[in-house]
Image (cartoon, rainbow, N blue to C red; front, side, top):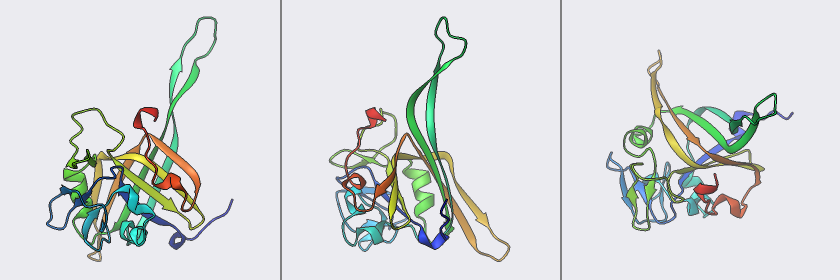
Length: 207
């Protein structure tokens, strides 16, 4: 097993939607039709950009989450146990891959809090609007997370923010840490950096 130092890892975030962005510059979330410039380090504004920004230069920089102090990461399978007559044990029928990522960073702006409060499910549609999850989750909704060590990428598709996913911690020295938890139903591990898989659409009905 190879161990890598924390600074070797970077985390990027984008929307599954390719038609617009989430703008958080006015301390409220607004969906718009911009397809570039938005991100945690956006040049146009603070927010989250479309998945197409993950490989577009300088999109990776704009999509990067900075000042990270911890990354908690888990991935696995969701099984549906099936009992068949004549068998002495249940058969584990794999349903989907699932994942969960908690990102802890030094608080620097309102983005994490706004995402948790107003934008848990991303945006929807070719004329983007914030998705409220009252309808069935579609293929252009949710968030896409990319974690890389510079050689291989891990990608989590169609992530949503956990209902209790935002936590704020006040440290004794006066620093403020905040954590945001994303969870999803499909991931792709060990993807080569700059692979088309990074920005390709993913049918949520298959995951």
